[in-house]
Image (tube, rainbow, N blue to C red; front, side):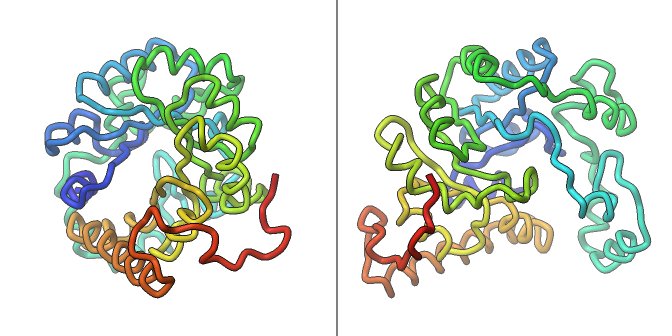
Length: 294
């Protein structure tokens, strides 16, 4: 549903390795190529097969997440039971009971597990075995050599997501990344890390002429999009903003979320005296002294 909404709206869609829908599912229900996201996993055979499936589905770019070689300590998830398999709590059951439409849709769908993993990764046949696999799957010895191997394995357009440091941005460009995403994973990996927006400008100044710089983490509105563009990003990615729309009203909800962000961006540009995206620059911002981090 989200992929179809993005396609109709004319923006790229990125499918996660850990999505409920499989690569083949999304390819079957869309007409245009989409991006596919992968983590750095230990199992090279599985990674090759996963990328092969993405190629067969005509995915136009591979997004390699480089800031999740291990899971951060997510205190909210420990409390709310959002794990694999999910742990039901009184609060989560009560919350689901208030979402009747969503609940009925979930009861009626055949897609309840991670479609790119279950039945494809060695030894993963259900939610229980998925939990054990996830605990051991991520390559905690991740380094630039491994990222280079994955880039070669894909042999196509590559975007490195999770860059928060100028030196890392330079290394990504050196390895041939077609784009990077300045991101702190929404603060979910290391909540004490710098915000992405503080790091953006200096990274753009350093590598913007070598590779395309995208931005995510904290984009909730069209004004947020404008701020990131003004600081040099070529585009922004959203997660939570479209997920709210998806949960509230399915495919139409995602379309509504995209329309709202577009309208907010259009209005903010007009009030800032800009009519073209290419005309947005730092002159429209009041940036506190010492805000940018190097």
